[in-house]
Amino acid sequence: MKNAQIPILGFAAYSGTGKTTLLTQLIPLLQNSDIRVGLIKHSHHNFEIDKPDKDSYRLRKAGASPVMLVSNHKRAIITEFESIIEPKLDIQLKFFDQSELDLILVEGFKAENFPKIELYRPALNNPLLFPNDPSIIAIATDKKIAQLSDSFGSKSMYPALLDINNPAEICSFIMGDFLRATK
Image 1: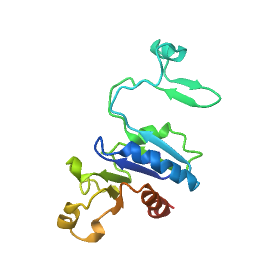
Image 2: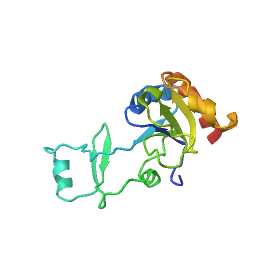
Image 3: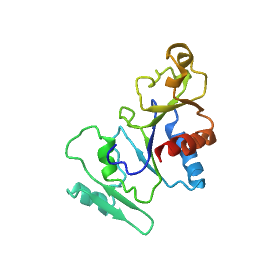
Image 4: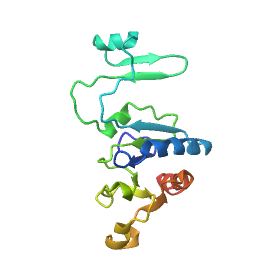
């Protein structure tokens, strides 16, 4: 990711695995350790963050793009894309202010090549993304993964195994193994 000015770590999984739930638990833990966290979430939907009865919505629908909404509490920038194409994470990083952050967490963009923790629940019967994705550095799961012990060769090829239900353990991995390796 040429536009990543700071460490970037993704959370990749199939829908319903618990990415958002885990991230809402991890972010406060990282902040308590003085890590300033930003987040980019990939959405597969045509979402609206603006309301039809608001001036900013009406101005955007009239053709203004981008539109910036600013108050003394927050800022939002809404940019309409001319073409409907799948967004690329590296391009989005150009528009993401990284200047006051220590870490960017990413939910989604699982097909792109950047360090990721795979979330895996065998009971959901989805296939593992690892080993087909060499950028997976850890797998957070709630059960032993038979495929890892049966078919993937030497232990050095394995990503770290973490407990998906233990955000403190995942936070320790991020603070230790991941962030230390990026310095």
